[in-house]
Length: 249
Image (cartoon, rainbow, N blue to C red):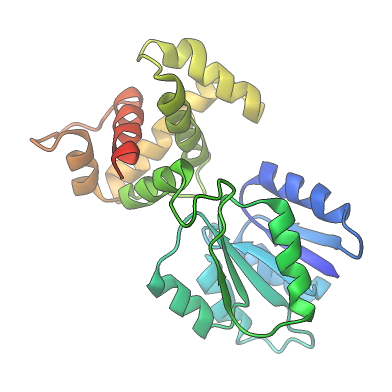
């Protein structure tokens, strides 16, 4: 079975590629990091299955499915959509546009493999809400944080989106103090993503600025200070407040 991976998280794509290529009868024939590139590769490579994250730049998952319907494909791939969170409206849109499966992140890779194998046995749209934490439908901490970032309007294709989410999760576990950001958290994230501490700090700042200028400013103000906050929050404040909010969800 030939598979195309579509996700803007380069690290995740590499992990998925290596895992799937180790499976019998599975071959990853391509990787795309945005919706426009995905459409090109679908036409060129004619994959059997497309594993596609909804939150990809330039053209999101829904946009890709809408465009696919206008293409005269000789071979139509099965579409497995992944996302950090979903709701009934999104599910209905994907179902109407012909998606086959819907899987909530994070998930076990072995679960993903099992569901792909079902493509040869079943037809139609199935909702698979199986988290890696196996919490019987409860949202994981990562899903909660992701939902907050989307509510703020942080662009998901920004590097700062990923760094900010990771920073919040680290803060929630370790309770870093403000002074620990530059000395501990940023260097740790830099090591993980093979960049610099200043690069991590700048990327998070760019993500916060983008949300403040073009996102849901009212939501951000209420998150940081329900009694009024007219200044753009600092990195340390936004990390602490997102962590606090996610724990109360």
